Amino acid sequence: MSKTNPAQAAYSLLALLLLCVAAHAQTASPAQPLPTTPGDIISPSRPIPTGLAPNMQVKLVKDTPDEKVYAVIFHAGDEALSGLADFANQYHIIDAHFTGIGAVSGATLGWLNPAQKQYHAIPVTEQCEVLSMIGDIATFNGKPVVHTHVVLARHDGTTVGGHVWELRVNPTLEVFVTANSTPLKKKPDDASGMKMIDPTQ
Image 1: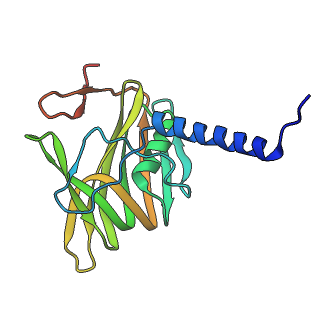
Image 2 (image 1 turned 60 degrees about the horizontal axis):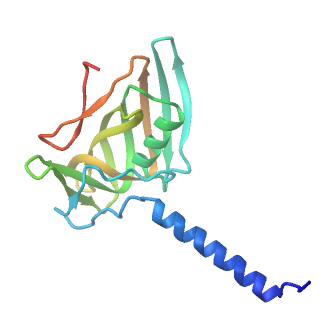
Image 3 (image 1 turned 30 degrees about the horizontal axis):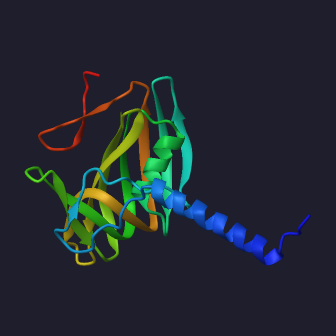
């Protein structure tokens, strides 16, 4: 019986690993990098990346049969939209609204052009205070969808706001989520290309 050459065995293992990586790359559909130029286009169907808020902490602060309230706390380096999506999936949120306050080192916001059914990017590249953050969570095809807007204050007190595509936290963002027991579902809106809450479902 012939013995396997160690070099050949190592080469075969390396080839197998490369095939696995290539197969994963073909099947995975990660979100594309966000634009950094004002006015660049962001598709409404762009997936929200997962796992970008490793420092996120969650505490249940109220628990009743009809609603639960969570404190969702982000720290420096977290990306808040990714974290909220992870939170909604992990805690099986089917209907919620939330508010937040804190500060960010930068953001990518968007302005919806209904005629084009696309968002125009509003990059924010400086440290800002989060003056207002409001949003909701409802389900589409059985999965929670986070929808949120913010108003940010720059160093000189001027403001910028829009639909949130990315919020890079620094040093903290404190979000309080009220989750309800009655499901809310979204449906596609052909006129705008958006997914909208349908209270009849």
